[in-house]
Image (cartoon, rainbow, N blue to C red; front, side, top):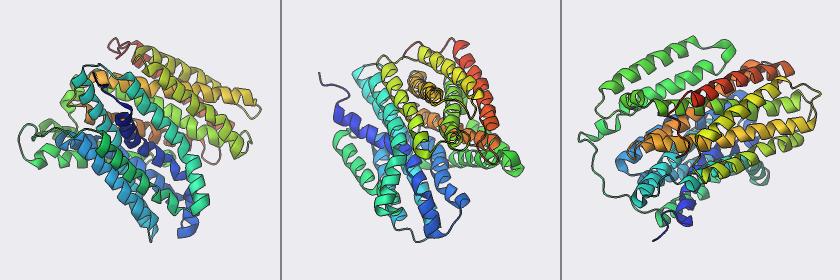
Length: 451
C-alpha cells in the first residue's frame, strides 16, 4: 500500500505553512533601511510588522472558511499567488503606503497555508484510516519555528546584499515555487457542491468576516499602548464582538460557529492554552532580548547566541512528542517549564551569569516546543474534518493574540528602556500565566493523553 504522506506531498504543505512565520520575522532587519529610504520614523515602520499580524489574525479563519467552500488545494494555490503578487508590489513600491499594502497582502496570502494544510492532511488521514499523523503535524510545528528563527538572519543578508527591496522580492520565487510544489504533489480537490444550499454570499458570511475583523483590529488598537488605553477602540471591540455573536447565532452558515464553540469546551480551552502560552513565549522572545542588551549590557551578537537554544530546543521538543502524538504530558511539562522560567525571570538582575541566561532560553524553548505541537494534536482530535480548516485558522489567530498581548506586556514593563524591574514584572505575569495553563490542563479530564 502506498504511503499516505510521501515526502514530496509533505514538503509542499510545509512550504506553504512556513511562509507566514518567515515573513513575520524577515522584515525586522530591514526596517532601518526602509525608514531611511522613505524618510519615515520608527513608529511608521512598525506598521509593516503589524500589517502581517493583523491580516494573518483575520485571514487565518477566513481562509479556512474559503477552503471549506472551494477546496483547500485551490485556496492554497490562490494564497501562494497572492504572496507572489505581494512580493512584486513591495519590491517596486513607489511610496511607503504601497509597502504597507504589500505586507497586508503577504499576511492574507500566507494565512492560507496552515488551515488549508490541516484540511488536506485530515482528508488524507481519514481516507487512509491512519489516525492522527503525529509526524506530519510535528513537521509543521518544527518548520514554522525554524523559518521564524531564520527570518532575522535571512532578512539581514538580503538587505546587506541587495537592499531592502530584496526582503519583499524574495516572496516572488517563494510563492512561485510553492505553487509549483502544490500543483505537482498535492492531489486535486474532489468536486464540491455548496454546503447546505443557499447562495455564495450566505455560504461565505461576509458580514461575519467583517465583524470578526473589526473585533480583532479594535482589540489590537485598544491595547497597542497599554499605558494609554484607547477607550474608543475598546468600546468598538465590545460592540463588534457583541454584534458578531448575535449575527453568527442567526447566520445561515456562520463564519464563526458560536454554537459549535459553546458546545465544544475542550476546543475553546485549547485556544486559551495556546494564547496564554504563546503570550509568555513571545514576551521572552522579544522582551528578554531587549533586556539582555539594555539591562545586562550584552552586545547584539551575544544576545542572539543566548537566544539561539530557544529555537533549537523548541524544534527538538516538537520532534520528540510528535512521534506518538502526545498531548497531556507535554502540556503539563510546558506549564511547569513556564512556571520555572517565570520564577527565573523574577530573580534576574544585571549580575546574573551567562550560564543562567542560556538556561532560561532553554526553559522557554521547552515551553514553545511542547505547547504548539500538543495543542495542534489536541485540536485535531477535537474537530471534525469539515470544521478543521476554520478551527485551525482560529488556533493561529489565538497565537497571534498571544503575541499581541505579549507586545502590550513589554510596553507596560519597559516604558523607557528594558530594566531589571521591568523584567521582574514580566516574570510575575508569566508565573500567573503558567498557573492558569496548568489549571487548564490538570483540571480538565477531557485533555487526552495522546491523539
